Length: 173
View 1 (cartoon, rainbow, N blue to C red):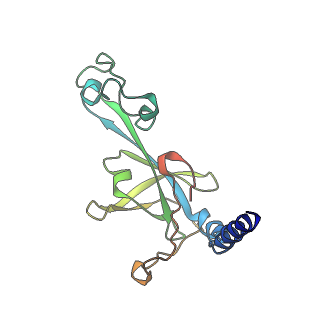
View 2 (view 1 turned 60 degrees about the horizontal axis):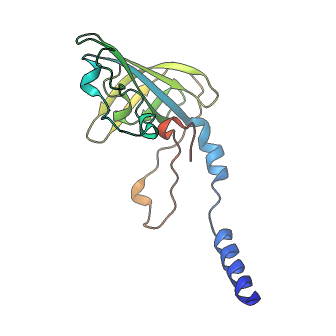
View 3 (view 1 turned 60 degrees about the vertical axis):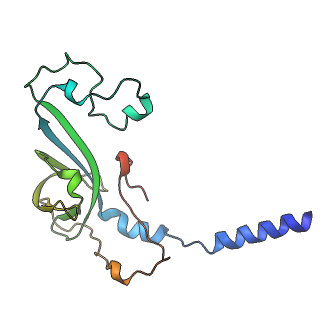
């Protein structure tokens, strides 16, 4: 039995030793990753977008813009503020940022927060819904950047890393 346990420990230790170490990559690329938030005015009555009755609260926090079944909260025709969260990365030191189109689609205002916590209002340069890409610009200089890779050089089975802010969790890997 002791021999079996030591073999299992050796196998799991060997497997762990072969895992890649992404810490240096994250340290290098992390400063160029940004958080993006947007606001937009939406027309209509809150009741038109209600979450169905009986949805557990755990799901409601994932969709904070969804009303809470209160048809009197916003009469028809009044505007309401909607927001979205996402991430992007700086591709040029003079402030060009690549993000997803779905993050900024329909936004009235786009805000970018850098890794060092500086915040800027961004201008939308262009977007493409079919590729889900958008290019933003902030007025800043000497920003950290990442180089855009070439997915055609990847092989099936190679490790890849995604750094971003899913669900607003800053700088997740």
